[in-house]
Length: 257
Image 1 (cartoon, rainbow, N blue to C red):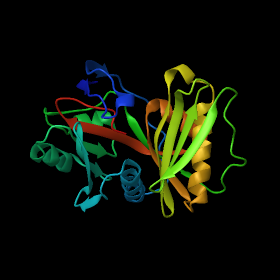
Image 2: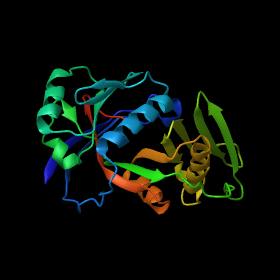
Image 3: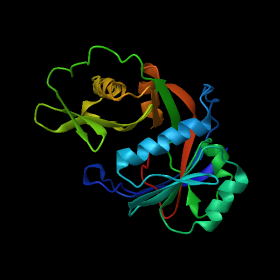
Image 4: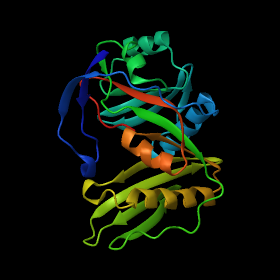
């Protein structure tokens, strides 16, 4: 088993703010991931970083020898390096040379493996991630209506399709967005708030985003999933490419997805 010191730093947006917390625990061995689909890591990573930058409104990703760099520009998420084909020497060198707090690495490898590559100044978040993709053609029809008591709102802002589901009192119940970039589209910030979970809202959001992406000409959808999100996406036909691990240079982590 691998012992990790895990920290959490609040996201930048007011609607997602949380208190800082630090967690120490031991990872038990997990069953091997069933993530053996044929899409190349280089291809899925290129699509992901391109669409993620559009979705988050950052400058375009810059190609580096090890993958990509994105200048995010947030206080607790300054920039991220994304490594589609990571190895221990490359990850360790980046950890030793990048000294700015809240710099991130996103690595297409499992957390137990990555934990052995990083230096003590870097930590691994407590929630493992997964790279997933799906065929967007044909789009499901018709676009589903939200459950009774909820209303669906959609808009497009600078090429990003935004979906919000509002409760009867006008509060935000679920949301998501998708950034089409040619033949691929990145699904991002999919969230159902706790009081509204298990009512099919996440499924509704994903299907509406699917329609929007397919209508914009995208043929393949890509996303980075949490453990909880992976179950939803798999039920909608998404396939798992492999593990996606985030590491951050202390003093903590936010939920950078």
